[in-house]
Length: 220
Image (spheres, rainbow, N blue to C red):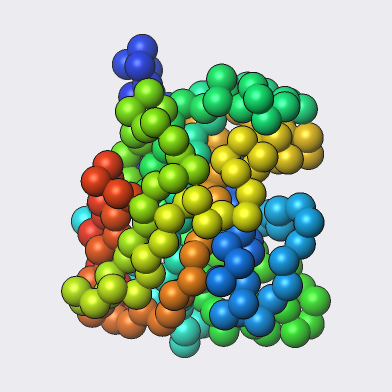
């Protein structure tokens, strides 16, 4: 499996580090999942082994009967940082990307019911499709980017990052007060409403405005 996501502005390989994910960052998505909004972001982790790229396939695990799609903005950290303020957050960003957070929803619901962590539901191989990085100087405002996702040509998710409860800068401030962020770490910022099931044979097409796209297949 490829273990890097881009060459930076100095043409150096950027290896994937931690994948830090956020939950319930869009009000309408929280409502559709019958979940309440929290004051601070909710975090969970994915392993880097879950990453795949454009034109690759999500593999349905044998122990799950229900996978859901979640389209998201990803933030790639450009240099090590800890306990930074929102006003300085952009200084530590390498760029942005389009990401899918694939969830084994049946496994997650069972975990929630029993008070267990979500790692299994989120951590399977192929459960983090991502695009190439768009360097931050190519994006004027990451807090105003269109996100969309289609399944077999039918639009399922369509929103804008301006609808996130927390700004990109707030997210980085919050996470950096909990853990050191390092070059290559990927933050997946959460999904808008419209999440739903994917099945064997589906073709997923996602877009981040006119900046980036993903085409991903689903198979067993």
